[in-house]
Image 1: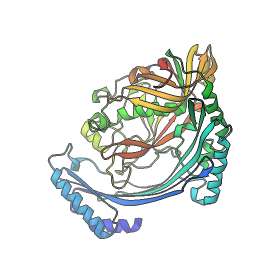
Image 2: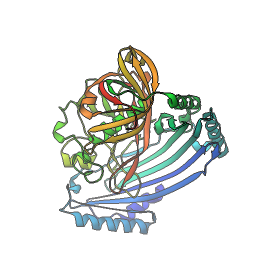
Image 3: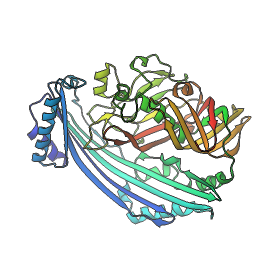
Image 4: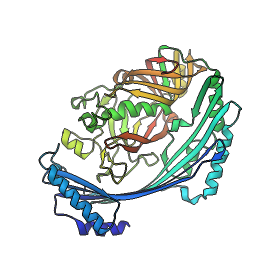
Length: 478
């Protein structure tokens, strides 16, 4: 199919300033066992092409699942019409934006491919782990599941670009719910955030074979635990909560198209403005955030974005100072500043927009023991269970599945219904310690939503544990 598309694209190329073809195919399989009962195994396949045309300053695109020469020619005709209609009325001169001339292949090695393990064996693996969650009569719901998606993309344009990429995404999930009287508590393995690229080896990497008894025990302990206290205290966040904090209060507000106003009527704007880059203190000197699609084990790794631009590792925030927005080529041209290669689309029938990819908090030099030992009055929170953030991505309120008090440098009793709130800038400026690489975990989310019509994309995050000073925490229902 790839070779055929290349030949057909050359046949249907219109006489325009720029024309590109982006082919995307995905095949997914999901297997789950709930309460020791195998759920229906789902299998989904999808493939198609987006043709994009820029001509005389205008921009147009059209998508099709008809991959014949005639189908591609019709999509090119419609895209060219839209480019003519938008010429002179667009937010940028799309013909003047430099277009990719890259040639390359991105296909990381998978150690233990999903499809080399028989379906019966994969089902038995999930049955076994699901059964290990039912350790007590008070456990009323228990679930283990894995979804795997294999993806392939091709990017071509009339400037010579030719890029092929292949992906294997794994999303393991494990959850247990316990009930006693009127109290119900749920613990999950990583809060549905253990998604990575790879094969069956990912299950070993995230503890899928070993952690069932622990999360069951913690769910039961939460039933009789007191509520989180209310007050201002030090807050130690574990990596499976840090990924949500990074995602919502750093990632989304730094998307350049959002800063330029493109999300205003759908998912809000950003408190960040263009003049902040290069000088604004986003956090303490310990805050170092990198955009790194080249880290191959993460969920949103790639060699080139969906406009054919080579990916690179870039500091977004360095030593607390805001340096670079998350903006692809179009947003960079509109804003007149450098960004990153993050024009991404969720499917062949959606245009690329500015999206997070792998957005990571770099490790520091504090061990977990050092961070706990330095706290007189505080709390450790792990695993996100609720989130809320305002329309400018500034004020936030998050809840966690699991909490433990810290008193005089020692971990104390377990508390439930743990919540905290803050304002992005003051919160990150109160970052007091950053964990070493030993505390770092590679995680991600497969369903970050943005855009109209909505696009759900995969986003990766890696973070160590982090300690924040003077944070408002509270218990009970948020």
